[in-house]
Length: 359
Image (cartoon, rainbow, N blue to C red):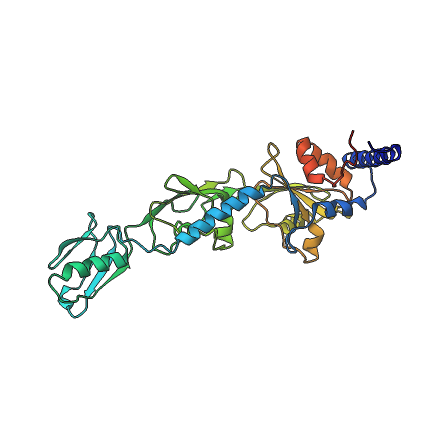
């Protein structure tokens, strides 16, 4: 059994821990605690201004990227000929047997000696081998070549908030961003007298064989991320979601709190500039509230790091709320407490307090 002195020391440690936690929740501490709070959360990457966020599920992200890596490995699959494709067939030393023709609706082409040859569903190598085997009955050591000159049998559908929704032919190298470009990019609408893009790339989806491919449309289309910009396959369905409202709200320690028009590429610095920048009383971090107030996701953004060039500008999304707290953590805690359940608060502002005693 622990000694009386040990229990007394443990009791003092527990009391200090309880007081510290209460101080954090109540905001009763000097402003230098801000540094400790930042240290507890930790930074991620040197150029990443987001120091903390709620609702971040690392396991889900890992599984999503594993799925995309599997798709990337599948990209090396050989192209299979489709009905409607234009193919050129040549037989070495027998020019009269060559042809440039289109694969019929039944997937076949007509050839001398062989009659109707099935090409649809076959790779180029398989089609060549089939032709050589068939001609071997009539020609000594035939050597054939098969080239797809025009792909017409592979199509994808893109619908939703694009300028030209419809059915589009794709090639063996077509990717998600290519389909978006073929459909004319985002559709537009008037917002306060200004034409704005209405495509909501964050909530758009790619469906393949009744399965949703977990591609990040923002990364694929706007940043050209090769992993997210997946290669398309015949029958893919792309749905570009539509923004219901394209605006951003700026509030807190700014001279001109307001709601401003959202436009593609809008960043935190530009939004703060439109609000007259920040008052001298602003905290070193800015809070971005995403997904609305019913189910908010918060990002704690290092605005000082962005201004010093240590971090990249934080890119905003439609309906984001930018909250600039005062230069103290207490106001931030009160604000967050009104938005998040208690469990999330403890996760967001945890300080590593440990209980040192047991009964």
